Each structure stands twice: as structure tokens, then as C-alpha cells.
Length: 295
Length: 316
Image: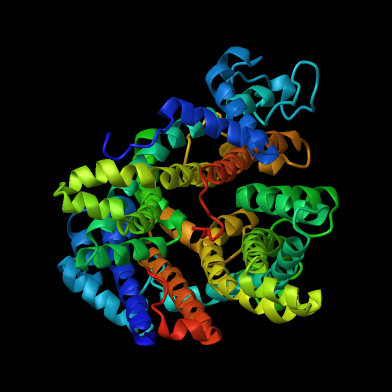
């Protein structure tokens, strides 16, 4: 390591601290990070604080208005809306929380590799990536889900696979920027192997771009996951999930609007939180993502 | 340059057709097991496969399918024995109605708001516009759609919340039901485009030639209209294209929420019904539109910006 880091550089932990305080210094970043942190805490400790079991049905309270017993009312089966809303993000956060790092890792490695080799093979791969990107995400997801079922063990690899594909592009572009620089040329001249160049020269330089990309992918994955649940292809009942809850409560909106509003507020606040954090993270790391494509 | 771009587009469409075909091949069962359901065994199944030509090799079937798709014949659906081209026709029209509605409202609105936000950067206008854009962009479509239904349909009772018109009704009958779906699409689309317009205008404001013009004493509004806008709006073309392409995917959820008889809902239905020929056809249409729109955007950018005609076009 000494050869590349002759200048004094803060260690990883110190750097993490700087980045966090950088994010917190911006109002939008502070709000975002707080929202994300709050949701993570809720996902972890939710089961200990909810007033009711999420499957417990009470026929007397079916579609009831908010009351002292049920603060947000109850759904069409008489289940407590507050308890189900508080627990509704756990499945989504678990699935996307595992799938996001997987997507960034596989997409990142493939992208860095092809950014390094370039040439004919690279050209072919980019056409395949383009082809995949020109299909609507929901079609790609649904074909796999209909084939293999909609359990967690299917959703995680499916999300990781499809959301890794756009990461290939980002990683490849970031690598292209770095490859032309002197220190990579120097490493080549020193006769380092490709693996060593990737590990020592490219990864540290591409890492920031991937980190930001990962944060964005996370929010898009959550969006995809909850949309799938909403359409009935995701989480299976009675597991509480925001998308599914909104779909169920939609028919009863006129009697008990709380049934859709509560999960809507939770889902939106988490996704907005992630987005604000990702934006602030990008600024803190000095990455320009103004020209972001809505893929 | 132009030819190269066209060639790349054609290759992408071809690859998409391969991916679609392979993806659908992976699905368990085929058109015959779906059509015959319980009776799908023995002689009956074999006869059906014979009729539809399913007993040939995958390669022959691919060539056959892609060949007739090129001539505009998308085959027949698995269950209804109907021509897919006919079924798709009206659905495509309905989806295009949504997309055009959203574009007509959304693009001018996005340009206006984006420029305003950029010129009054970090003022209350900008903060309001940018914050709303983040909300509109990040909230899932089904959430904003449900919210709009709750507010405008359930509470205020202004417009109907779901579409009950049949797929092949004349366009006029879709009003006013089509208002809310268009509203949701417009919301998301406007947010995406205005963000790009804003950052692009801000970037141009900081450019050397804009500063030079200011130093020369050119009036502010003349700088904005003569120097800033033409240069700042160019990159927007590509974003508009990407957004339109996104629209085609995003409509799937929106059409389902509003029960709108468009291509997107037809796709969901065909996937749940295992109507594979229909799924393939719709996927191919959507992917082709995506490629064509992007191609058109690249060509428009090239025509509008003389500097790009000679330089290498943006690397894919």
C-alpha cells in the first residue's frame, strides 16, 4: 500500500466520520439520514413496541376509525393498522438490504473489469446491457417471479441481478475515467497483474461512485419491491407490507382513509429519506450525479 | 455517424428479441398447457403442440416469430385464438393517449419550472420547486396514484377514480376518467425533466461565455434567452427521451391502479394468464419504442448541435 499512499490519508473509520458529518451538515442530508436511521431502528425493534400482534383479528373493530384502543383504526379484517404499519417495512428492508450490496458488488466488478479491458468484448457486453435496460423493469421481474415464485429466496437474487445491470454502466464509466490516469499506466508499466491493478488502483477510486450508486439503487429497489407487493406479486399475506396493505385498504378508502394513508406515509418517508441521503452523500464525496437517468 | 447509431439501435432491438424469447422459453409450461389447463396431457397436448408448431426446435420457432414480427404480424394469442396485432392496436392507442397527455402538459411545465428554479437558485421558489420535485420523483407511482384518487375522487368527488371505459371505445369517452392517470404520469415526468433543466441552466450560467456576456454589459434577459437557454436545453432532449421510455414501463403500475385498458395492464394480465405470445409481443413493442425514442433523441441532439456532428457521439 505504501507505494500508492505516500501522502497522509485518514483511515477508513476517520473518513466514515467525516462523510457522516458532511451529510449531517446539510439540512436535506440530516433529514434524510434521520429518516433512514429511524426506519432501520423501527425494523429492528418494531416487534417489541407494537401494541398488537399483526395477525390478531378483532371483528368488533373491522374498518374502525382511529380510537384509544386502535390509534390508527383497524383494517377490513379487524387487524390493528398501527401495528401492521410499524412492522410493514421489515420484509422490504430485509430483502432490499441484502439485494442492494449484492447488486453493487456484481455489477461493480463486471463494470470495472470491462472498463479495464475494453475492445470487442466490452462492445458486445454494452449492447447486452442496453438491451436489458430497454425492457421495463416490471416485465423482467415478473417473468422471473412467475417462473420461480415470489418468496424471499427468489426476490433477493432477482432484484440483485436486474439492479446490478445498470451498475455495470456506472462502474465502467467511472473506470474509464481512472484508467487513463498516470498511476494506472505506471502500475501497468511496473508489470502488475490485472487483478492487482483492479484491487489497488481502480477499486479505491471507483468505490465512491459505487457507494452513491448503491444508495440510489436501494431506493429504486424498495420502489420495485413495494410495487410488486402492491400488484400482488411480492410479499404473501398475512405478512404486513406497505405495498400489500395499500392494495388491500384501497377498496375501503372512503370509510377508513387511515388504512392507506399510514403505510403511504411510512413507505414514502423511507424512500425520500434514502434519496436525500444519497444526494447528500454524493455531494459529500464530490460526485456529480446531475445527469442521472431515470432507469 | 448516423448510420453507426442506427446500426446500434437495430442490434439492441435484435438482442431484446432474443432475451424476450429466451425469457419466455424459461417459463414453465407453454401456450398449450395454459390453453388446455387440466386436460393438458397425452394426445390432446400433442395435437395442440402440433397445431401451434411448438414441437419444432427453439431456434426454428425464434426465426419464425422474429420474421413475422418484422412484417407486423405478432402471431395469435394462446387462448383467444385472436390476432395479437388487433388486440394490441387499441391498447397501444390508449397507452399513447396517456403518454401524449402527460407529455403535452409535462414537458412545457418542466421547462418553465426548471428554468425558473435555476434563475432564482436557492431562493424560496427554487427550494419549493426542487423539494416538490424530489417528492414527486421518489414516491412510488402507486402511492401517488392512490393519493390522487383519495383526494380528487373520494374526498372532492371531482373526477372518477377508476376507468370503466372498454378498450376499443372512441377516445372521447375516456374523458374525464383519463385525467387522474395523466396527472400521475405528468407529476413524475415533470419532476425528472425539471431537475435536469435546472442543473443544466445553472451549469451554463457559470460558463465562460455567459460570464463574458455579463462583463460586456449585455442585458440580463438577453443573456438568458440568447446565450443560456439554447445551450442549456440541448442536453434536455436526451432526458426527455429517457423519461418517455420510462413512461412506458411506469404506465404498467399506473394502468393497473386505475384499471385503465392500456398496454401495461394487458401485459400484467398476459403474464398472470401465461399467455406467452401476448407477453412476448408487448415486451417487443415496448422495447422497440424505447430504442426508437432514444435514437430519435440522439439524432435530434446531433442536428441541433453542430459541435456534435463531427465529434464522437456520447459513448454507450
